Image (cartoon, rainbow, N blue to C red; front, side, top):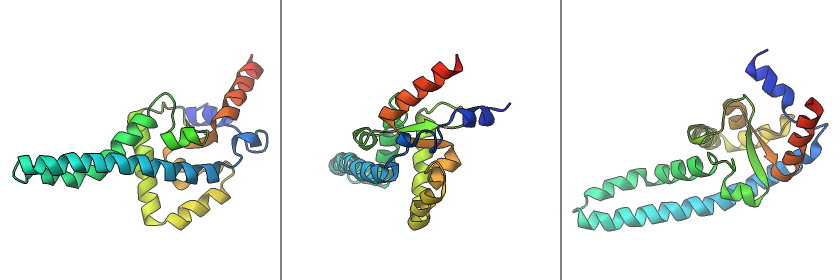
Amino acid sequence: MTNDMTASRYLPDPETAPELFEGVLTRRVIAYLIDLVFIGTLTVAFALVAFIAGFLTFGLAWLSLLIVVPGALILYYALTLGSPARATIGMRMMDLVLTPTRGQPLDGPMAFLHALVFYITFWISWPVSLLFVLFTPRRQMIHDLITGTLMLRRSPMVRHWQRQRSAQY
């Protein structure tokens, strides 16, 4: 049995555990808006440092402004999604957690890959990306399917995994 098959066997099903998927799309949108505030704050802080450093380096540090937004995104997602909490600040506030579906750990590089694929698919076609979630059984977006992740409600998920473990033994 492959890792993919083993992992999918233990993935929650919306029909048997609907509490895990209840309001996930709305919560994701609100969490993203909250995260934008934190990313914006990081971006402004980095830009301010680069702007001041530009005067001290006769304009040379202003070139770093080209990497301020990508740097803020990388830092934010790698540190929050790649943490043991597996959630950004907005996701934590909205009781969400990002769960890997392919048996791989959700570390910093995987968290960054998830965010990168999200922004690529979102910038190319955000309506399709948002509508896609309505047609997948586990309410996954395009980037979730590509990176092998699943967004769930955190509090019911803990109870779900405890039931799964006790049923196994």
